[in-house]
Length: 93
Image 1 (cartoon, rainbow, N blue to C red):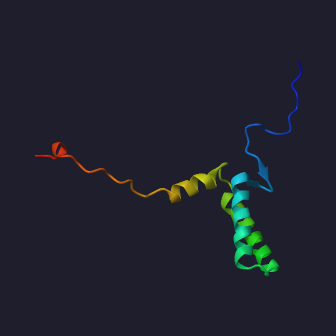
Image 2 (cartoon, helix red, strand yellow):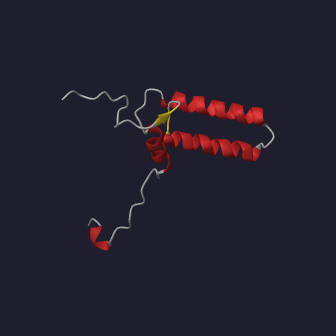
Image 3 (tube, helix red, strand yellow):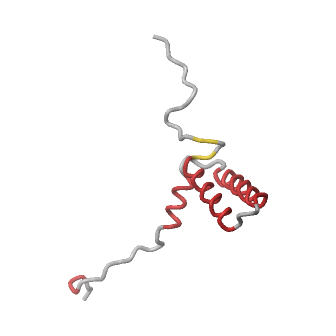
């Protein structure tokens, strides 16, 4: 049997214009927010989207897949987890 040529790696993440699906969702959110605050500024909103796209591309350059989701999870997680109260039996004499 001869191997079949495949032009896409099945283990790689789906990308469109160099961005992953989560990044596209972030751009979609920026799109809605830009037009929510500035309905008549088509040029300004397009410039904001363009800058957000290139900013995402610059941040993701050389990083592994899923980097921004992990970084966002790290930022949104609490810095310190709350420690439960000590019982009387756990006090040192």
